[in-house]
Amino acid sequence: MVMPTKAREALGWAARDSSGLLSPFTFCRRHEIAGEVVETGPNVRKFKAGDSAGIGCFVGSCGDCEFCFQNLECCCPKSVFTYSSIDRDGSTTYGGYSDHIVVRERVYSPMRHLGIDRPGLHLGVVGLGGLGHVAVRFAKAMGMKVTVISSSPWKKKEAIELFGADGFIDSKNDEQMKAMMGSMDGIIDTVPVAHPLATLLALLKAQGKLVVVGGSTEDLKVPSMPLLMGRKLVFGSIAGGMKETQEMLYFAAEHNVRAEVEIIPISYVNNAMERLAKGDVKYRFVIDVRHLSRN
Image 1: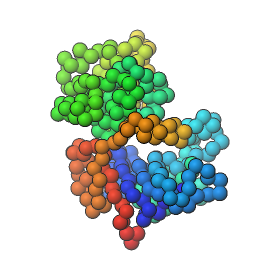
Image 2: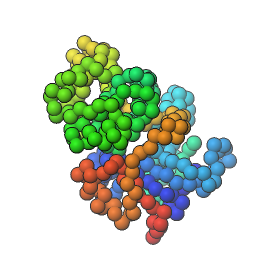
Image 3: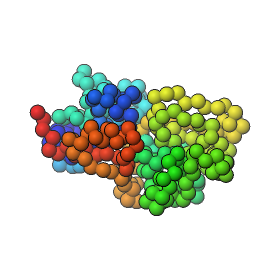
């Protein structure tokens, strides 16, 4: 698919795009892109010119390794990122600000992969931001009991009333954390900075699963004894493969799982970056680039 600037409707960014892990503050390469297909190759069957399409953080893989054969292109050793990566023709990928982008045909994937997606299971969601609020909605659509774990007590009202969570824990409140020990089947941890994992592992039942999707640039310390004594698992996930991503979109459409976004013009980007650094966003910024000049 080729998507020129004039056809793209919107693009979003994750917190890590603005510093450290993905790029310097002065040049932010976006990897959550929505737009329109304007051209397809001769072997493309699922898309045609004029179709709406989305692009995640990968645009290519080798197609021949064990991971590609398992529909896990995200694990391919030759995968091509949407941003700051070298494509097959030797060019650098620039993400959502490219004039054109060519592509081949995070919470949903690990939940499905690890089996923490069944009605009646109790899921904890750490952080109620861009990833966390979507995790709550997916989990509720799957029929799960959901408890939000956050260091921001003021988010309790929105967690329960807006996103449908069943409960809320202030992670800085020792009594609340202690009261929920051993109660959860799984936890999705979306926090993108270093933080203690021991207190989260204590919330899990035996054989519970802690999934890290936050992408901290600092090392996370994992205590060994809770893993050994409780047969608990710590797991990481950056994205799903193409098949799984398409299944996720079908599921989201069927169950009306949507992200809460604030649409902004390109001229507001610097203000948005400042607000993002302060945590003042509900819950994703989306840049409208329909009228962005190529000059």
